Length: 350
Image (cartoon, rainbow, N blue to C red):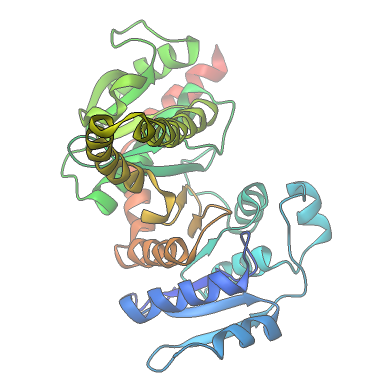
């Protein structure tokens, strides 16, 4: 890989997201200037060059890598793999596989990003399925939730692998010394939850993580745990529910502003606090979700990402490269390798 990890090379899908190069290029340049990254901007060369011409790129390394195709939000992952082999997403993956880039970010079609990165980069040893991890605010300090939507249907062994990888991310991204890991369930007690959660609970009890048991949805934001583990269906619903609640409360409070003088005073104070919470919930604050379990650093950004979100996504990719996160993930998986193999063989025998 890059002989100088202190200056990571980040491949950026310049065509991804709702706004394409107009937002992605200045966002990436902003991050590169701030944190000293080398950029490979991938996509339609004339459009990228036009955006670059508006920016001050002195002191940073920027290279345009032309891609003739774009995978849009309507493309099915399988079709994009077959018919759009020169899409900006696929070219980004090729750059990482060919060791011309140390990591990539894309705000494009999430399914296509998942498919291209998995097909091109492959999985880490000890990982059956890659998973998306996202950062959530809490009353104390942020926590990470995995899986945020990559896998709708999972097995217990998948959840354990997610937990191992998210434990590493909690240490790298949030600085946790000994992350408290919990399973998202409908009750705290052992024995609560569906069959998947019950089976996963038994696995977590015997692995090397600091497993603290189950956590209910209402307690995710209390700060009692550092890592929340669930399947991608539940995780995505939980995240969207929290985002929607913050937005709805904001609209309700704004409606109260019209109810009188004293209501305006109280509501104005409440709105200030709610705005701070909404800002913490905003995907732009962290930029994107790392896709864990691949032979490479991949950050999946929101399709509606603005310049700030893109800059933070590039920064996250660079941070993961500088921290040698891929090696740390391999170490975490290796530490639980024998146990994981045993549980997998037991499940297959059953």
